[in-house]
Structure formats: structure tokens, C-alpha cells
Image (cartoon, rainbow, N blue to C red):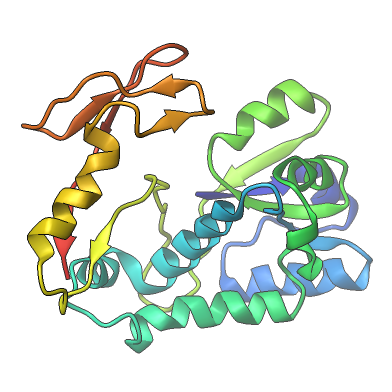
Length: 227
């Protein structure tokens, strides 16, 4: 997950690409004062897109060590070092920095369009968004960088958008059965589709790998932990 900067917008307003949190907040405030959306964002067509924001703010605030401990169940998600990332995201949202508080009314395509048209100065998105910008908006001039340090001591972090996972509550009475149920959609034929067309056709229990056929040819791996 990275931050995209519309360089035409930045040049027109005399902004430099921010290197610190204070510089980034200053750009956001000035953008709003000039009628611009600081960060374009939209997820009305895919609710899971908000996970990209969670990943960005949690990882960049907590840092890799604290996030690893949280994911392994060794650190509470209410720990200030972890929760602080969500608090920061909520603060940005309440101030209108993210999508002008209208992301639920905007699609992913709208998000890219607002950024490319210069109505938004920046955009938090995955590296995959570069393809849309290059092919659909070839006249858009942009730059990309990892998020500035948003919490003292964590440094600048490049969060990885690695899909998802299953988690089982530690108080579950029969975790082994739940692990088995979590594995089934990815290991048994005719349970998982891609765009309702690609169906898992192979069952490979040793690595719990399903191989999707037709349009794409890739493997899905699942690792389940009990927290």
C-alpha cells in the first residue's frame, strides 16, 4: 500500500511531497481550504477496500514488530501501539481527509477518477492502481511513495496487501473442527469461485492448496492460527 501524489495538483499549489506527518497534515488542510479532497477513496462497490486503509494505518502506526505480535495473539488489539493506528485513521476520516467522508457513495473507479482529474490531491491505494492510471489516465502526472512516518519511532513502512486470513477465538471449544471448516472452501472442489467462473478443481490436502482454473492459474494457500 502506497500514497499516490498528483504532481500537477502539487505543483499548481506550490506543495512539496510531504516527508513528515506534520507536512502531510499541512497539505491536507490546505487542500481542503482550496476545495480539494486530500485523499481520494471509494469502496461502495467493494467493501473490502476499507481493509487497505486498516492495513496502512495499523502497519504504519504500530510498526512491523507490534503488528506481528498482534496477529500472533501476543499483543492486544486495544494496546495503544496498535489501536493508535485506528484512532489516527478515524481522526483523518472525521476531518474529511479521506474521501471527504463520502467514500461509501464512491466506487473504486470513482476514487481513481477523482485523483486523476485533480479533484483529489492524493490517494492511498495498492501498487496495482498504477496500471489503471497508466492505461486509463495516461495524461495524469503522478508520483508514488510510502506513507510518511505517522508515529514516532516506527519509520516509514510499506504495508503489504496480502489478501485475508481466518482466525479462531481462543475460547472456542473445538478449535480443530473449526480449523477443518476454515480449510474446506479452499481445498474442496466447487466451493470457491473467482468471478463466479473459476472453480477449484484439485484437492491437495498436504499444503491445503487449491489451484484455480480457466482465466488465471495460481495457488491459494491458507494458514490458520488459533488465537
